[in-house]
Image 1: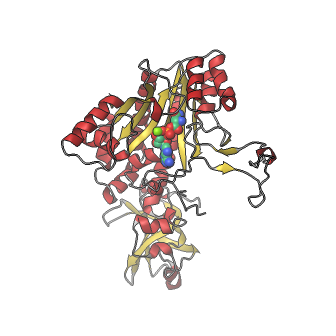
Image 2 (image 1 turned 45 degrees about the vertical axis):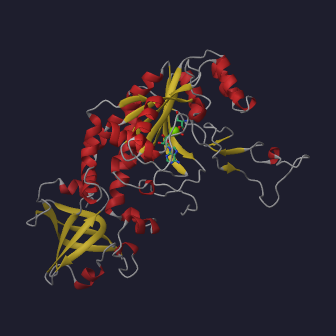
Image 3 (image 1 turned 180 degrees about the vertical axis):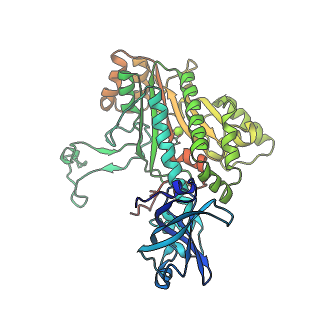
Length: 464
Ligand code: 4AD
Ligand code: MG
């Protein structure tokens, strides 16, 4: 008999002989009859298996414990109990893999997210992580669909690179050198010519610079891959390894860029509401009763566009009126997430797109405004999260770009390949980066970024 997924079974009419396979969530009942909740990961919902002790032998019933894996053959019948339309009247149950209830880590009373992080190798088996994984998958699929439907080309940018795109220096070095015996040159510096690539290399912090090479060749590209940042930030919004989506578009200015970013996130939220409602409802009921409402709320409204300078005014007025922030704010400072969240949650009550930042707090590649002080960057800020997207129009002018690289004391020589895009047929272009896990924080309502990626990497934590 062919196995049916539980998701299918729950949508079928009663009457059929079926075979289901999955893991036991719970078992309850009395001497005559046991009710087993079986889940196979195809949906948040379990199928109820009714095991009559006259049909299923006692020994088998005993081995059916939370976490055990089963194959169940029986008839799909209408359920009298509430909560499900159909259930399986078992005729045959095979215990595929037993699960010792005394040792199974998910059997414990403590089901807090914090406890689950300590048994992260097993937490994927919980309802919560099942829901998160399915939503994560749906969002990844929707991202490819969005760009594919628009004719963007998926560009694979390197993970190992010599360039620090963001210029922040938070890079993980990649080397095959023996750390106990590092080759030095005559001046006593590390001799990277002896290293695997013959130069100093690191894991990428962003695929953008290579993305610009693609966009100025085939027009519109996007990347979607892991990025790595060795920032020592132990916050609920930072990972050392996170996934980023970076579209880059030739002939786009900052306004086109903002429009695409807004359309993109709204599309993804709509896709989640259309395709993941069972999982969203589960997370809504368990962790965050405002979740579904909040998702719907971003769809109908235009995001608020505001310049950095206007935002500083708003924040300074708030401080003058008694609002207390942990970090001070004045023109020239980089906003902290408390400032971003004040703008989004208290002041405007909707997502905000901040533009025109002081050039000194942004990367070298951003297009400079005429005022000589600000650049055409944009950050999209979301409720509960703060920054979810960072992007900009790029400096397309060769001279201005070179001057900026010099001003920042960066090496022009290492960036010749990038500067060539401005030498040969330069065009206005723009792009942005969406942090995949930040998006998932918003869509799932989870509060900690460690709970929206299967195997989180954070300072002092790289298990599995
Ligand atoms: O603002 P960022 O640093 O921008 C860039 O990397 C640009 N090169 C993007 C571009 O224009 N193509 O990072 C982009 C986004 C942030 O808005 C945030 O959502 C996410 O990446 N992000 C992180 N997510 C999780 N953990 C971290 N440590 C993150 N750092 C950035
Ligand atoms: Mg940023």
